[in-house]
Amino acid sequence: MTSTMDRRKRWLAFIVLCFGVLMIVLDTTIVNVALPSIKEDLRFTETSLVWVVNAYMLTFGGFLLLGGRLGDLYGHRRLFLLGLTLFTLASLVCGLSNLQGLLIGARAAQGLGGAVVSAVALSLIMNLFTEPAYRAKAMGVYGFVCAGGGSIGVLLGGILTSALSWHWIFLVNIPIGIAVYALCVALLPNARGQMQNARLDVAGAVTVTTALMLAVYAIVDGNAAGWASAQSIGLLVASAVLLAIFLGIEARVRSPLMPLGLFRLRNVATANVVGVLWAAAMFAWFFISALYMQLVLGYSALQVGLAFLPANLIMAVFSLGLSAKLVMRFGIRVPLAVGLLLAAAGLALFAQAPAEGSFALHVLPGMTLLGLGAGVAFNPVLLAAMSDVAPNESGLASGVVNTSFMMGGALGLAILASLAGARTEHLLASGVDALIARNGGYHIAFGIGALFAALAAMLSVMLIRVLPYAPARSSEPAIEALERT
Image (tube, rainbow, N blue to C red; front, side):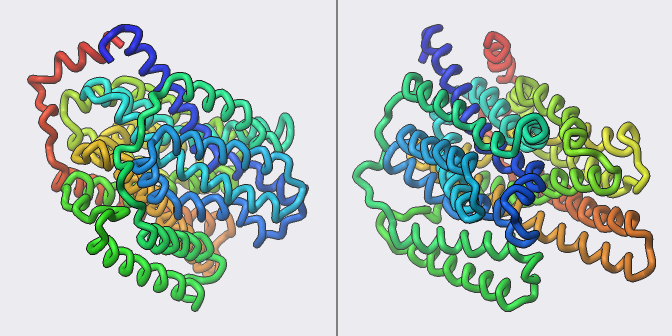
C-alpha cells in the first residue's frame, strides 16, 4: 500500500476495527453501573445478579485462544465478521430481555462473539501495518482503545442508565455493530486463511477451552463459594489436569492449536507473563478505585465516570502519538518498564488514600500516574507479544496475549478483592469504624497491585529482547513518517 489512496483506506479500515474492538471493551464495564437497575427491574437476587457479569467473562476468557486460531485457519476477516454478527445479535437480545435466564444466556453469547472479535482484531491490525513506524502508531491507538475503553464504559453506562434505561447500554451496540460490519466488508481485504490445508486440532481445542472456562468459573465464583471450598479446589485441579492433557496433545499432534515452540520466543513468553501481572494490577485499580470513590467518598456513578476522565485523556495523548514516538526512539523495553513503574506508583498512592480523601489530593494524582503508565506501556507490551511471530500465527499470538490479559485480570481481581474483604472483616472485628475498615481493605488490594506492576517492570527490563528497529539512530525517518500521517 504505497499510494495516498491506499494509505488512506488502510487507516480508515484501522479506525473501523478500533470501533469494533471498543464496542467489545465497553461491554466489559458498561454493565457494572447499570447492575442496580437490572436487579430491581428483573428481580435478581444478590447472588444471581453476579452472573450478568460472570456469564460474559466465562465465555470471553474461555474462547479467546480458539478464536485466534480459527482466524489463522479460516481467515481473520471472516472470523471478525462472524464474531461481530454474534455480538451484535446478542446485544439486541440483551437489550430486549425481560427474563433473568434470557439476559444471562445472551450475555454468554456476547462473550463468545467478543472473544472472537478481540482475538482476530489485533492480527488484522498487524497485517494492515507492516512498517515499524506505522505499526507503532497503530498499536498506540489500539492500546488507548483497550486501556481507556473500560473507564469510558463507566461514564457511558452512567449517562445511558440515568437518561434512558439500562436496556440502552446494550441497544446502543446495534447501530455501531451494523456500521462496523458494513465498513469492514467495504474496506478490509478478503484474504483467505493462511493455513487453509491444515486441520483444526479438535482435541486440543476442546481440552484448552474447557480448561480455561473451568478456571474462569472457579475465579469469578471463588469469593462466593470460598477459595478453600471443594468446588473451587476441584475446578482448579480439573482445569490444571486438562491443561496438562492439552500440552501433551500439542506436543504430539501434526497441526497443533498452539505450537509449543511459540513460547521459546523470548519476547512472546515475557510479554504474556508481563500481561498477566499488569492486567491483575490494572483490574484492581479500575474496579477497586471505583468502589473506593462510590462506597468511601460517596460519589455517584456519573461522578465516578467523570473521575476517570483525566486518566483517559492522558492515555489518549500518549496512545495517539507520543507512545509510538517513544517506541521508535527507545524500542519496546524502556517505555514498557517506565510505564509499568508509573502505574505501580499510581497504585501506591491509592494505597495511602484516606477515608475522608478529596479528589484533588487523593484521586487525581493516582489517576494521572496510572493514565501515564497505561498510555506509555500498552503499545510496547502488545508489540512485544507479536514481534517474533510469523504472519500465519499472528491470530494465535493475539489470542494468547488477550487470554493472558483476561485471565490475569480475572484472577488478580478475584484474589485482591478476596484479600480486601478479609482485611475489612478483620478490622471490623477489631472494632474499627466500618468506613475506615472498608478503606483499609482497599489499601491492601492497591498495595499488592502496585507490587504486581513493579514485578512486571522488572521482568521487562531483564527479559525483553531489543528489536532491530529500536536504536536511536534509525528512529528519525520513522518519526518523520509518523508526523506526516
